[in-house]
Image (cartoon, rainbow, N blue to C red; front, side, top):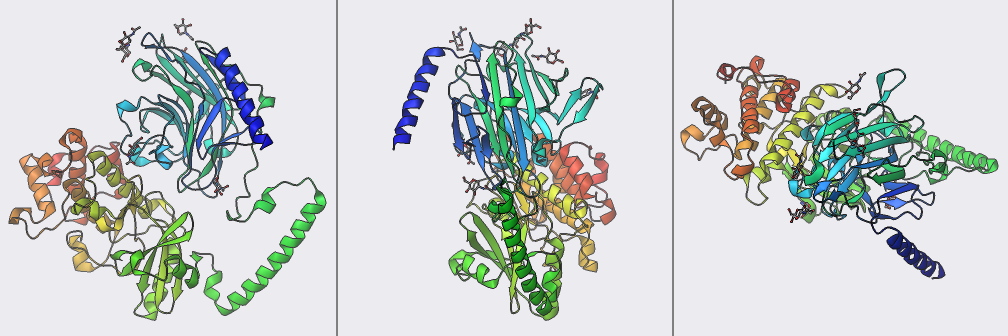
Length: 623
Ligand SMILES: *[C@@H]1O[C@H](CO)[C@@H](O)[C@H](O)[C@H]1NC(C)=O
Ligand SMILES: *[C@@H]1O[C@H](CO)[C@@H](O)[C@H](O)[C@H]1NC(C)=O
Ligand SMILES: *[C@@H]1O[C@H](CO)[C@@H](O)[C@H](O)[C@H]1NC(C)=O
Ligand SMILES: *[C@@H]1O[C@H](CO)[C@@H](O)[C@H](O)[C@H]1NC(C)=O
Ligand SMILES: *[C@@H]1O[C@H](CO)[C@@H](O)[C@H](O)[C@H]1NC(C)=O
Ligand SMILES: *[C@@H]1O[C@H](CO)[C@@H](O)[C@H](O)[C@H]1NC(C)=O
Ligand SMILES: *[C@@H]1O[C@H](CO)[C@@H](O)[C@H](O)[C@H]1NC(C)=O
């Protein structure tokens, strides 16, 4: 009580002082944020040391923090020069880091409705890129979102009104003495200092960064001519936003200075808060508070180790007994859930939890922990052999992690049933969006993103992963959409295949053997389905329209490919160049002869515009 009223009194005094002293505040300098005029939102918080934490290493966090007073960055309708400098650190959670943080200038501090992960807690799929946002951001991004044109998974970008950067570069700094660029890992857990300067006369925005122990490099990493008069408003809020996704990092800011019409003050490095040690990488998230706390007391450490040692011994003995009984468990592999856990997570496979039946299994929604929602696929194996094969395949795919795949968390088995535990993907499967009217109509840009996402998932399966994996059943009902409508390809790497009319490559019908080429064929057909909003085969249509591939090919020959586009897509936001690119790539993939089809890597290059499509006549041969 006393503490509360004291802090209220302090706040009032602080506000009075600041109001009086800064009729028009033009500069500030914060070493840490204790007592700073900073407002925090979402997952942001200020540590007792003064460190600003935008997100911790939990999944799908997003947090913003803004300087409490708006800044006047417009003067008689034209922008003013400003300069800012800050020190940040990104400490990755277990596994790959994600997603990043950004310095933001925005007309408002309200980011409700924004998404975490790729959208950095600033935008969402519907307002991304909208010029009404009037937001300038400089992003420090540690994940490559192919569909958002990210260049790599460690870059700095200048963003206007959305997360697709107008300019970006791999994180690096210029070493003045050696006269060369030195690359810098953003998610190293080490402090990095940034300078962002805008000269309104020259209309140049510069972004420079360097490790904290180095002085400011002479050359900026990014330097871009921009007229920010149209972006800034009368009142601008300045601050930071950070977000995690399925991959996570703690996003931290140590200090910040800002100045209008002048250079931002330099930091006294000794006054900055220090960065807490990251948790030991090998330990699973829920247990380490004992270990993470650093104790100066040696006897304490010894006791802890002794206790741990005894624990370890007990666990080893248990494991030994276990392994003796069931040898397969000990091999490093997928997480094994007990049947009890899975059964209670799904309410005993209650019918209200049934998500649907697909690919010889039933999917149930379940809840493992308050924030951990899962999808469980229940497969009944007819033979012992089938069960053994399935478990071997689960083992093979259990270490696969990619942004556009539905990640397998583990499995459980009981009798002749196997339960595959996946992360839950909230928006359900793509076929419902495409072929029925009970979901919102996907816009063109959403469709294009979805297509690029599937392509990158397939590219990963076909080559980038530990060993090539054929999907074998690429179709709309196996593509799930997450909250941000990112595509997540599911149901990869499982034995029994159910052919789907229209997606099956001719040679697959003959040989029954799935290959990378048959995956590419199926993806080609799927691309056309996504653009045209109809199924590959629709028997009720007039004869010339029954087969989607033929119908698109006819459109191509007649030069009216654009007419094949889903009529529900708003014509104004169609990008003709992209529609043609996707349909032509689709035709190329759906070539009847396997040799005529491109590899998925090439397909990704076509879709990204890195590689141009072959000349037109190629499409005719063999489709
Ligand atoms: C992150 O913060 C949330 C909310 O404050 C908390 O529930 C969660 O346990 C934290 N996660 C970690 C890894 O510290
Ligand atoms: C700024 O622009 C507004 C609207 O365009 C206009 O009404 C106003 O007169 C302008 N102010 C100055 C100082 O040029
Ligand atoms: C995006 O955010 C805006 C508000 O910022 C909100 O109105 C809109 O519903 C959000 N869109 C989605 C798809 O969540
Ligand atoms: C360093 O990187 C910058 C920005 O990417 C580039 O413009 C410059 O040419 C590079 N300089 C050297 C010496 O490589
Ligand atoms: C931006 O960088 C360029 C190139 O180094 C330099 O000429 C210019 O003065 C810089 N502008 C600002 C505002 O720092
Ligand atoms: C902006 O650039 C102009 C012209 O190069 C220069 O005279 C001016 O001092 C610069 N302003 C700032 C704030 O750096
Ligand atoms: C900058 O943009 C503003 C508003 O969009 C415009 O009025 C002004 O003429 C532009 N300045 C230059 C030099 O292009």
